[in-house]
Amino acid sequence: MADFPSNVTTETSTRNSRSSQAGGSRLRGLTANFTTALDMSFIRSIQAILMMAEIILGLIQWALIASAPYTIFAAYGWVMFVAVTLWILTTILFFMILYGAQQKLTFVPWPMVVMVYHAAAAVLYLSAFLANAASVRLWRSSFFYNHMAAAAFFGAVVTIAYGASAFFSYLDWKGDGGNAANNTVPT
Image (cartoon, rainbow, N blue to C red; front, top):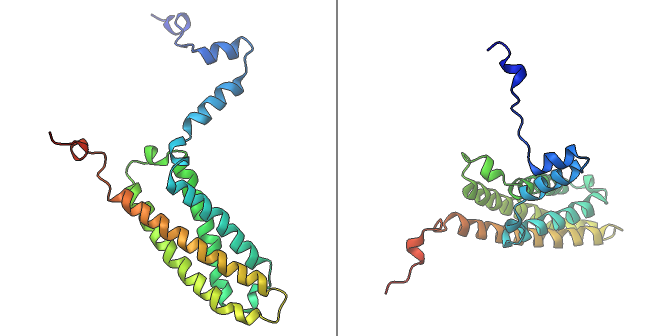
């Protein structure tokens, strides 16, 4: 029994490990694991499309504001805070859902968390849009007037996108949960 560890090997081999031992590419196995981790059904959903629109349009909005000397008017500090913060949080949430964080963090009530996030983001973006739209006239005689007017437009579009995301998240949260009894037709 003393020579048990030296006589027994506990390694198992798979197709990928044999090909890497025989000179195959380890990158092939890595990319296979990477693509299986992505939730491709999420990418095709309306919620993912809305989140991508929020990310892209939110980036355009805060880039337009950041290109002007926005610190002159206090309202734009709030607009920039909301735009940048929600852009970062939406990007993080998008990638968490894309990589299946809901399967790894099962203790989090994901449908409710996503719904509350989008509803809060819609309210915050509405306040930022109103502050931006109300302050555009202050830039009328400036070169940056068009930047701020375009930022107000994109703020309105992002507000609508967050509102739509909140609505679809609410439908997902209140969904039937896949109960087969609700989908049967009585005969």
